[in-house]
Length: 444
Ligand code: PLP
Image 1: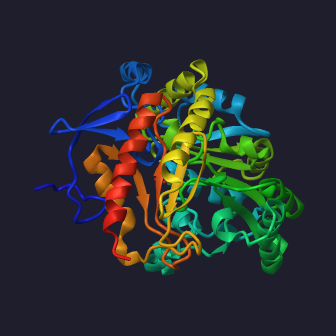
Image 2: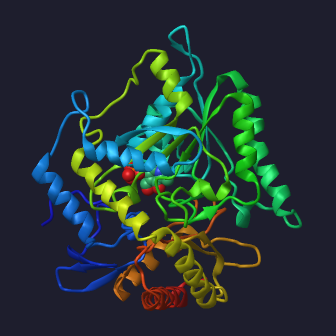
């Protein structure tokens, strides 16, 4: 009997014993194509020689040094590479162990930024519905699925949620994309006015919404408008690129495609590419300066900040991406992958929407395409799709529709950047077979 506490208590899982490029191999020798890189993590596949060697070299040189006493070369060099390529005037990098820690750090930094006479002045955080920012209490509070927060609500900070920019579900009939982008961004302005502009410390959003909606980018000039609203009210803009960052959308940082820069940026997942747990919060020159001129002390910290082995892995991951020009490859492969997805899925009777950027794609399933009505939750469509895909030898990330019945089940695809054209065919074939098997049995 397994004593490991699984994510879902009754789950019976295969035992993964090896990784080979885009494949995971279980104890019976069965191979699974890693169609979502876990949760958009394994961007380089599972057996990258350079990253493995970097980890071995760092273990030999130095396993650990506490950041209260020392900095290290891998952390400094990784920070330099990130800042060299970061948007806007992001200037400092705070290394943590994962996405939730990066988001917690961002929320606390935003609180500490708005200080007068040594006292934090602003307390409201605005986030978006149907977002995911992590599972620690602060990040959970920011997340936009009410059902995730429900059981913990007495423990959570107050966060105010506005609608996401989600064209498929929210754009009115006849409304232009520009008009919709403007209406959607106006929600932030209205919420800031409702709370009182002097009380709002930050707005947090995922440039491309990942796990909860399935690769949904904003449309039109939504983010230009958001940036302008935040600037006008001195509200910090925190972009959570934990899932969509690190080249996944065909840009090193997803916000590059939107032409804006945040005040604080959160990354993780693809930064360590699964070889090591590492995340980071990047902040602007102005924020760093304000904190260092103020108390000189960011009141936060964890034992494993800027862990040297994790930083060495992150440095090797970025070197691989940049020197092999893998992100340009994400754009061209992304276009080829999109074409295959549309070709195979667009006409399926229950496929409502196919959306994404780069190698980050979501397929949303609905009971009725004309009305966009989702399948009722009792169908358990996402879970069945996951099971059927695993049986085919494809691991992909399913998500049930939102419990308010507004959004359908979806699968998220985030394959490794090294995927070949033949492997694209394999993924699409396996997913199509799994989908057809499941949909054939859905009792309408
Ligand atoms: N933010 C986003 C956008 C995520 O997708 C996730 C994880 O899926 C997190 C934060 C939390 O990251 P972690 O699971 O590494 O704590």
